[in-house]
Image (tube, rainbow over all chains, first blue to last red; front, side, top):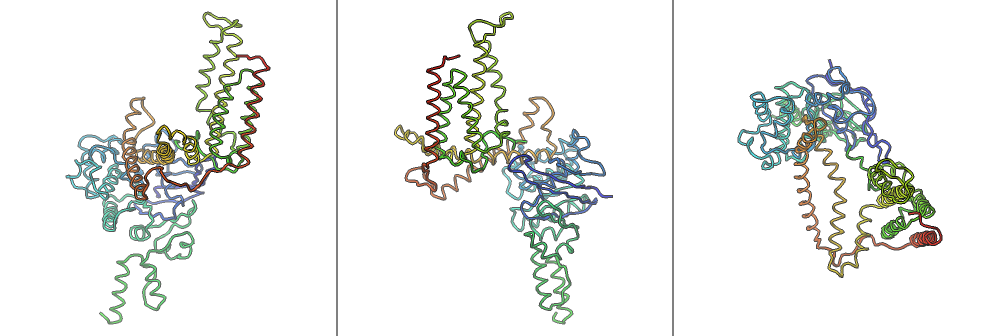
Length: 287
Length: 270
C-alpha cells in the first residue's frame, strides 16, 4: 500500500494580490513505504512548496494529501501529529538551532512529541549517532560547532522525532565535497537501519542518481516525470528544456558510447562507470 | 500569514502618482496633513475628502488595498471618535446620568474620524506608489539643509534605507524559522499568553543570530566597496522636477485657497 498519496494538489501564493503565483499545479502521485524519492527541478519549480504540503506546513488550495490513507487535514487541530510522522529538514537547517546545548536542541522535537526521561535520552543519542556527532559535541553550544557539524546537528534534531517519512530539502547545499559525501552516506545508512521513506530534494543530479529509487521531476509547479533514475536520465533533451541535466558521468559515458565504445546505457554513478570501463578493458585483453 | 502586512507596501504601477517626484510627494503629503487639520466646516471637509478620493483614484491602486491599511487603525478611530462625542460641550441633546451628548460632540467625532481616515489614506498612497529607496532618497534631499546643524543626514537616510530593505527579508526569515520549528512539533498556536511568548524563544533566538550575521556581512560588503559615508558621493538616479510635478503643486495651491476661502466665508462648526 502506498504510504503517501497526493491527489490533484494545487497551491497558489498571495491570492488576490498582484504577486499571485501558482506554485504547485494539479499534482497527483503516490509514494510507497521504504522508498527513497529524489525530487529535482529548476529553482522556482515548486519543489519546496510541494514538500511543505506533505507535513501540513502549507495547506493546499485544492486537492488532498493522504497519509496512510487518511487526509492529513481531516482534523486541522491534530496537524501536529502529522508533523511527527513526516519529518522535514529545511534548506540550511543550521539556522534553526537555538538551544544552549546541542543535546537540548536535538531533544526539542522528541520532547514536543511527548518523550521524557530515559526514552528521550536514548532517542537523542541514537539520532546523534546516525549523523556521527560524538558525545563530546553534545554538551557544546550549537553556535560553537563548525558548519558541517551544525548541519548534522540540525538534521539529528528531525531524525530524533523518528518520523516515518523524512523529507530533506537540499541537505548538502553549501557543504564541501567531503561533507557532502559523508552526509549522503549517513542518510543512506540511516535509511537502511530505519527502513523509512525518504524524500530528497536536490539540485545535484549526482546525489539523487546515487541514492534514489525513483526520481520525481517538477517544472513550473507540475509533475513532469516520476520514474527510476535510469528512465528519467535517459530523457536528456526534455530535462535540458527544463533547465536540468543528467549526471556528468552519464553524459561522459553517452558521448563515449556515441564514439563507438561498447558501454551499456544508463550509467548513473562513477562506480558503475568504473566497472564498465574495467570490464571493457578486460574484454579487449588490455588488462 | 506574516506576509499579509499591507500597510506601507510598495505596489508597482505607472500611474500619475507613481511618476511624481518623491520629494514633491513628501512635501505634498505634509501639506495635505495641514489641510486636513484646517477644515472647520463641512464644506472644507468635503473639499479635502474629494481631493483625497481623486488622488486615490489617480494612483490606480485597487481600493481594497486602502481598506486593508485602514483596518489597522479602525480601533483608534472608534476610540477617539467615541471620546470626542462626550467632550463636545454646549447644549446636550441627549442625557443619561453623567453622559451628555451634544450636537457639537457628534460633529467633533465626525471630524476627528474623517481626519484620521484621510491621514491614513494619504500616507498609504505615498508608500503604495513610492519605492522605499525613492522615499529615503527624497528624505535625504529634503533634510539636506539640516547639515548646517551638523545633523548626519546621509547616515540617517542610509540607516533608513537599510532598515526598510531588510523588513521583508526578516519577515521571510521569521516565516522560515517558524515553519522549521513547527516541523519539529513546536506548538505556537495553543496555550495562554505566557505560554505563547515562551513558545517564541525557538524563533527569536535564531532570528537574532541571523540578523546580526546579516548586519556583519552587509558591513563587510559595504567596506569592500569603499563606502565611507555621504561626502563626495554622487547618485545613480538624480531627481529632476518635471511639468507634472509643477502641475501637482499648482493644484494643491488651488485646494489650499479653496479651504482658506471656506474658512473665511463660512462659519466654523467646531
